[in-house]
Image 1: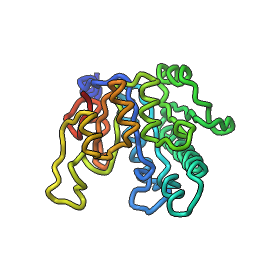
Image 2: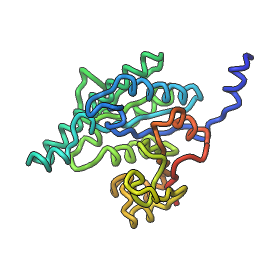
Image 3: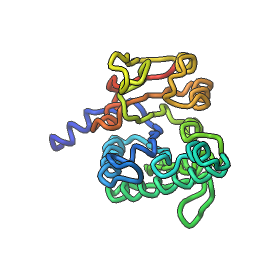
Amino acid sequence: MSPGAAGEAAVRPVYRRVLLKLSGEALMGPDRYGIHSETLHSIAEEVHSVRQLGVEMALVIGGGNIFRGVAGATRHGMDRASADYMGMLATVMNALAMQDALERRGLHTRVLSAIEMQELCEPYIRRRAIRHLEKGRIVIFAAGTGNPYFSTDTAAALRAMEIHAEVLLKATKVDGIYDKDPKKHPDAVRFQRLSYLEVLQRDLQVMDSTAIALCRDNRLPVIVFNLQTPGNVRRVIVGDPIGTRVDG
């Protein structure tokens, strides 16, 4: 066995199946909107490193880099349901971009959409998604829940529970959950661990309340961490104490 293979074998993931939630803004990189190619491929490399550990992995990606439903409805007077459907289509675009980046690295992927568009991706069927994961494919869930008024955070929580994921990984631009915005308040304090109820009572808004309540009711732990630090996805998977864990 080569030294590299021996080092790989020594690293053991603490989770067998995970769901990684990315915001659409995570794909923007330094740009103001759209998909930044280097950032996209950097994230794909993170996913690749985790897949090499044998972890079954699913992704949910938001659409805020292309269109945000709530913002569209609020700023432009658009019907909220129509705006949300537009946001769902944006998530499909992001999912297809991520699929391409992952497959360039030799990974097998499937995009499953809650809104049927058979020319582009498979329709979401729970048992089919689980079977893809069992075969070692990375599953990218697109189009949210398929319903307006539900965020992609809620879609991530729902899909994580449906596929029996052991943890929901929420990748953000900060290194965990703080008592206030660390970008505006230098004295902000980061929490290492919180209960679901504390997140709701403090209105910390790391995820919407529906998503947190779903996780609480089904005892699905959430780990919030900084995606912008290279290697962090892998660190979470192998159990390094980074970010903030929400459970209990």
